[in-house]
Length: 200
Image (cartoon, rainbow, N blue to C red):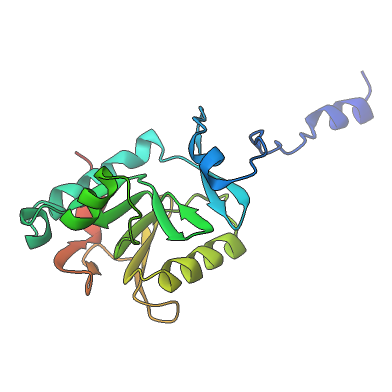
C-alpha cells in the first residue's frame, strides 16, 4: 500500500444528518391522526410539517427539575400543569409541540373537552446543536404572536438559557447563580442555573 492510498483512507467523510421520511398530508386533521414513531416530533406550520428532535434521555432531568419547582407555585395549587411535549395551537395554521409548557386548569379542561386551547403563557424549548438559527427565530416570532408571555431557550450542551419576555427582551443566563424567571406568566416560578442543571 502506497502513502497516497493510506492518506486517502485517513480522510473521513462527514456523517450525513438523518432526515425522517415525512408523509404528505392535505389537512391538519389528517396530520393530527398520524402516529409517528422514532426520535422525532413533528409540528404543523402553514401546511408544512417540521421535524424536530424529541427530548433526549439525558435531558429529561432538566424538565424534571422544572416540574418539581413548578409544584411549589400558586398555579400548581390552582390546578395548572407544566406539560411535556404537549400539543399547542398557535393559530389555525400553526401547531407546535414545545418541550414543556404551562397550561391553566381552564386550558386543561378545554383540552379534555376537545375544544380549541389557547396558547400556553410559558413555554420551554430544549435546543439541539442541529437546530437552525432561522428556525429558532421563526418559533420565537410565532410564540409571541400567539400570546406566549415567556419563552425559555435552554441549551443543554452549553449549559445556557435565554429567557425571552418578547422577541427583543432577552435575558441570558450562564452562571450558576443566574436566575431564570417565568414572570409575568408565573410570577413565583424561578430557578437558578445551578438548580436547573442539577443532576438527580
